Length: 308
Image (tube, rainbow, N blue to C red):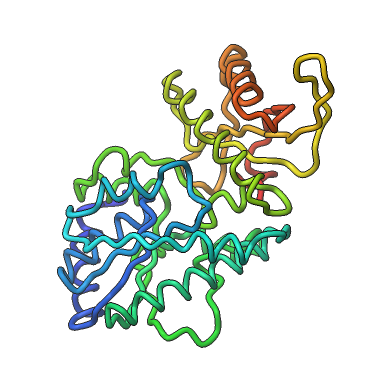
């Protein structure tokens, strides 16, 4: 059985030896993986850690403000928020292939971290990589952005959670005293909404999925539905609809709600019909560009949890 307390003690001791005297930065997304790593590294090297939240423009609504509220001035993490949204959108606009999206995002993250490392005189980048990331990347299922690193990067990469699964990381988070909203936070892909816009990226499609995500999250919370992950995606193409007495030709949104333990497998959630109808009604009514809402019924395998 996994012992979170023993893991913390062993990790902090190992990080002290590995990072002693080295200024270090971490990409802190606010997800449970990077949050756990940040607190572990702080315990090991204290003020030599700088935690950088990068706003890529592909985040959920007000996510940067929420993460800043949780971490700024707390846990000794030296929190920094960097707005690189214009850079990421310029790089990805018009890109449709999911592997290209992940590669471009991974490389741009490193560019941003290397700039911050120069500002902070840091030599080490700590990442919240966990076992499913390298298993899926190595198996050719999909590349995780934190493992598509560019050649010639100057920072030493350290990955303290590399051998853990998500359920184990959550146990460590609880043992470290992280707030419930972080410990139980739904997984969110590193490339963010870029891989929840299936196919070509455009500012309009990103805004549609951002608005739909907020509706899905509100309804999941309001119905007290427990799930591993619940999210919408914007599908390629458009579908004919009716708005008032006129024809409309708008976006298609698919909603996915799954349960899992370690993200290696997942089962589709079976919420009641009233709940699904309410989500469909809100999305089509509140987001003018959407004419159709679908519900994904596919387990993992054969599907992955995310569409891309």
